[in-house]
Length: 171
Ligand SMILES: [Mg+2]
Image (cartoon, rainbow, N blue to C red; front, side, top):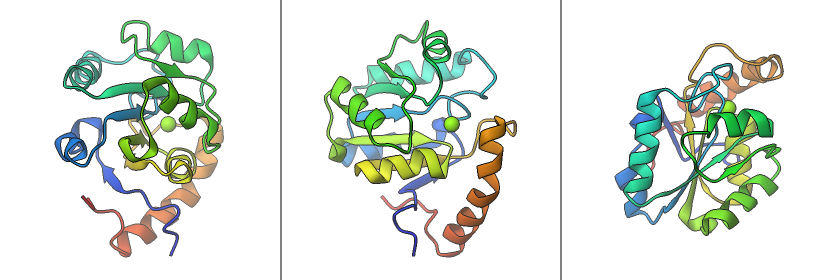
């Protein structure tokens, strides 16, 4: 049940995902959500470890794109030193942001993974677009008000997925 919402993969943080396995499975494009995926939503820039890690991923051959529902200002400030392709105001779970991101980095749903912290925004969007989806534990316990409302429902689904054995590494 609810397979349309079950993430393909779940993990503690961006540092813990099995990128080598993703690569082996044909993934070449990594779309990262920003708020509470790469940094707490109220922190304007990535920390050094995150910045270095993303640049290592890019150096190792992945095409990295940041995709956020946040404003142009927020996204560009966050990306000031990273200088990755970005899609801001992506309106996830609508498909258009992810479609745009894939167009920018030249990947297809079969070769793209979306990494985010929200079930009804990131994962739902990724599933609708047919890309590989990875759900991470939020980088911070703090959430914007609009997100806080969704977390309660999200928790119930995650509990269900965990119980149904759907929150394991399926690769
Ligand atoms: Mg987020």
